[in-house]
Length: 181
Image 1 (cartoon, helix red, strand yellow):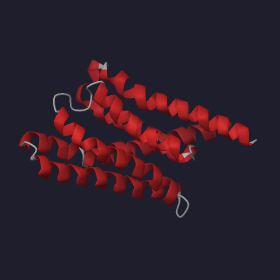
Image 2 (tube, rainbow, N blue to C red):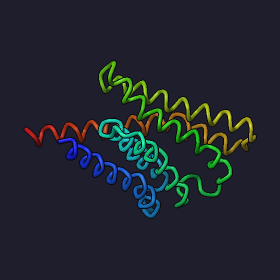
Image 3 (cartoon, rainbow, N blue to C red):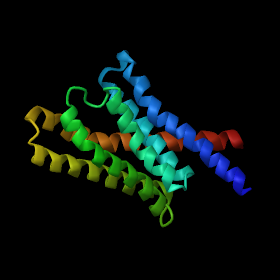
């Protein structure tokens, strides 16, 4: 039985790694989405992070999954192409925010129900990333145009995409329950 659980977690990990790596690369090639790419990719990535919180227990698997999507986005040029110096400075805060989301959901779900735990974790993630932006903006003196764009991207957009990611995961869980009945 324990071997079967470990196999399921390994398969889940492979699937989530695939999502984390290939969703940003795939959507980079979809031209008709325009500016909506970030919302779509962010929603899918956040759904993947919620799935990590629900399905994975091995922290050695969770940590890389919180880092891979932003590396893939950066490598494919999706994450603020042309603004590399500024966007690279934000990577550690994105990673910490993603990890805080996953670990927050895991921790708070033991104390309160999944949805309130997720809402608290979304607030923590968005706060970490936004405060990271404010810190880096003051240290690196971001140009006003970059600062304005990043303020939205690393602020309210984080809340939107994480909330939509939660809604996507809840929808998948609901559909799975209906199918299993």
